[in-house]
Image: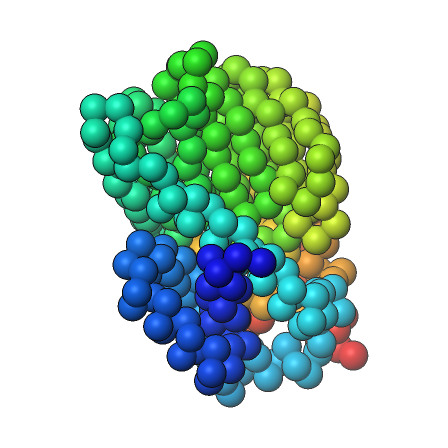
Length: 329
């Protein structure tokens, strides 16, 4: 293992709060000596705290979670290793961005740009090659610009819709914590929030190639295809369906197509900035299709609960959803 690898391992330990006092001192010394590594760490730390904030203790929801148990979730140990895997992947991506040789054509040095969205915010950005990107709520896009070499690489945490500027000699590559999406010129949507168990890619125009980071399998998507990648199992499922209007979230519309309540609750959490806890797997696996525009969170929950019966309770710490049967028991 090289010294650089040692440093990145220390950063992973720092982020996952498993670093010793001695190791913390070593890391601080390295960051003081190497400014580029310090900048990489700053970017990664911002990302990590955004998606994996320290849990608040003694909240009603956490007490409820402990009481009912996460029978449909991974064990804490598994989740911890999943987080470490995410951190290691992001470290690799960010470090590569800072390792670019700055002595390039025309002596033009690239800049590591960060484009981010707060909750309830949608942002449109145009990259240096003319590619247009829409960022959804609580998303982050990192790009080293201008693009140099024989490819255009960006890193995405969250959801974005891409209209990639055509360039047959310079493919456009999107890195997420689990997938690499390679395109030449196309329109597609990527949902890859690090905390989600399933990531989605929907292709509207052109063709893309998907490469999971966990194995050597690849998949080719054609227009109308949607890919679902399970970050826990490493398995991918492809469906060909009517995708409807591209990325309706750009118009402020929340659209669910045959999605279970677990998935929907995560989208509602991000959109409305509130914690939502689904208390049982039966209710969490209820599936819905529908569109909501400008409705309040309580109105959406009311409509969903009418379609398939469940109860919800709102308090200052968030929302608890459970089946009526579980309440009676």
